[in-house]
Image (cartoon, rainbow over all chains, first blue to last red):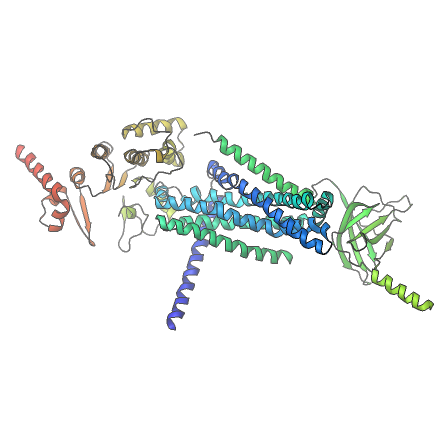
Length: 258
Length: 151
Length: 214
């Protein structure tokens, strides 16, 4: 009995310790953002890897999700004779929830894991130590450009996802099911408001990008410096970031509505 | 240093289409207004606003010229509605603001009908003539009541 | 051990003094001035694998000096020539052989003319030709530039040949001395460690002494 309690206690303290380390790392990351501008080239390369290379995935997924949404909603709405509402429902659900969350999860799997693996491999081959010995801060040099790239590319990818989803739903609702294109677009445009909906979407995607950037770079830095450690850290990034994104989604949704 | 033309091109393309999508969502879909249009605020008082909500459109001859910016209760417990409209409309001071329903069961909006006077409503001024919302159930109730009375 | 000198690891007890400066209680930032006078050669080179040889070797210069691009290029060419490498500047680390990689890392470690050079197993995995090359390079740097060099190695022959001072760490204890003292030691652990190399080293030394009795 006492063993279980002790176990709980030690687990809790190590959890808090872990959070403390992450917070420490995050603080350092933020600080390095405002210091002497780091190499722009690194930031661009990171942006390329997270953004450009994700375009295909995001666009394809977006269009597909749009199609599914269009199909499901059209079927359901026509039961109540409310097909004209397709544009509005598609628009609101995608912009407020599905867009940022799905984009967040997709980017986590694709770019987040890649970044953790990359930094972890650098740790395992002593490259990070090498930087430290050259009096170069690995956080500023390696982690910060990548975290920043993740944060900034998320809203852009989110916008792409949503736009393509609209197209997907259009393809199903209008082209396949015969809903009037004008009605679809009008419903979409009338229901969506910048302040409440698009703004919320933007905020969410920025926060998700920030969380992912922090988690992915931290886990890369903190992993055990061997192949198994890197692998563990990579999967851990995907799991942790996904959960955090979903939690953050709830928090933001709740607060935004207030 | 080496040239990174593929990389730079790729990033430029990505940022371009990303911002483009964002712009589309914000401006076209979301209805964000960029600068330009000067607005003035006019007030109207109603006995019953029905289902009118903030951001409901204000229409002149069916065309949207602004939106409801706030709804409050005044000292006499009547509904005070503030309307944000384009400043260059030149609505005469005897214009009326009425709460109408789009279609039979649609959302409610403010319909402005022009009067005949030369003087125009300025920023902060109030509509003299207003029409409260017609609610279907009240109408039906009155109909039934009238029908009952005539028997 | 080397990691403690470089400040990458903290000792559980005791103190680390580098050039008279204690490393205790120093933050990463505070360690930088000390580290700028140290060059470190890692066992696997620790070159950044996304950057070319040119970018890797030039990194310390670009980050910490205001030198012009021309002078940086010149210096890079200089150190690469010193380690016996040519035409490698545009290659990536994964395109280099083990020996070449080690030498590029070497070049990077000395590019800013440090006062102290730390080498982690510089001879491991190298063929005899490269071993001799690196050995000569280390001796030359020590002689001509007065560089203090700390080497961790299991390569007994080189160690005995090069060292002014040797330290053997084993089972939580350590023994220190000159190569002669080590080779001539009666301690069974030391003789076991030095093995054949120790004996031939001693034999050669006796030979030299016999030939030059003065």
